[in-house]
Length: 203
Image 1 (cartoon, rainbow, N blue to C red):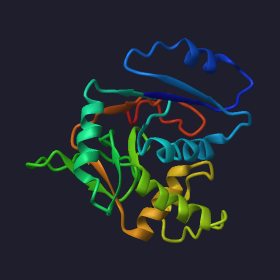
Image 2 (cartoon, rainbow, N blue to C red):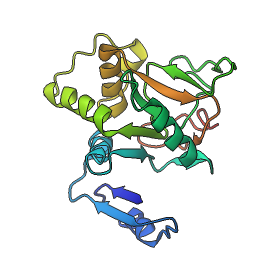
Image 3 (cartoon, rainbow, N blue to C red):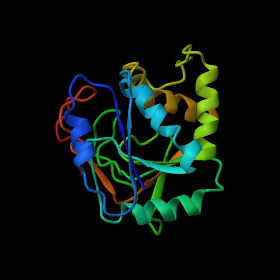
Image 4 (cartoon, rainbow, N blue to C red):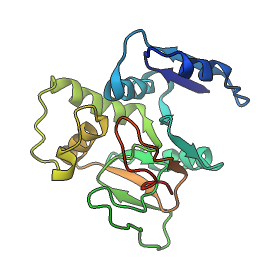
């Protein structure tokens, strides 16, 4: 099943692309929002689809996926579903560290994955129970987040960042994201509302 969530906009271009997109692998559902949610609330709303579907793969519109992304997502979710310290599963694998933009490569050993105490935002798998725990914490903050525990570079992220809130939660609760050693998604890294680093995170 493919669910396309379209935020409110003055342009109908995105909605038309969604309506015309042919999905050959199952049903397609389009959700249109009557008010502009903005990035953070839109992602949170998409995460809430775990209440209906139990597990979701969340893809923003500037990503491309490997032909094997779905197999990996299913297997990783099945393997880590009882590991409470795992908050989510990334499709993306960093080659550049977000904090200082130095090259980053996981140590190649016998494993397929590594763990980072920061969430992915370029293709991720969320489960109903882990998302619900985060959402309960998030809603209890009443937008009064204590971000003193965040690394300096994360504190500099704008308030439109949902990832900033999830980092906060993961550090407080000692949670991790599973990252594949070889990426199953790539960011196009086109300049946009929340990024101007063209090509930096394309893998």
